[in-house]
Image (cartoon, rainbow, N blue to C red; front, side, top):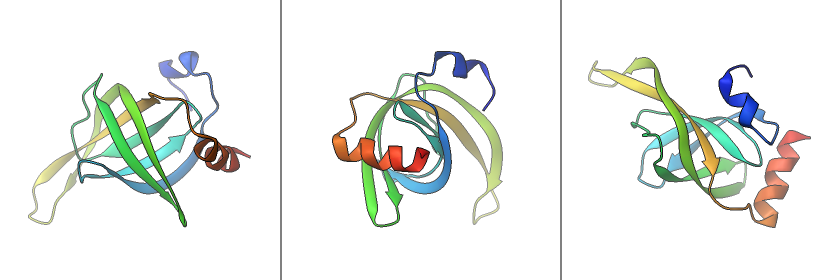
Length: 112
């Protein structure tokens, strides 16, 4: 993955492209994830510095993760059911807390 944010990353990321839900009832797509954070896309504005809780569903396992928006930008617009343009945001999330043993194990299983 290119870009200026790689220079600050402590953990390798792996592409997973799974769906999840923001706890605020908005859907999102997790583009990639590491032990330190994730890249997500959402149709909800994701302000830099905002703390998010989001649920990631991996087969029968679910991770409830908390992180802070490090960077965010509009990457495209999609059309909703009414034909209106909806901006899609891409954001880098840094996890706020140390992962639990189970969360770490699940993410590490994706990386290997």
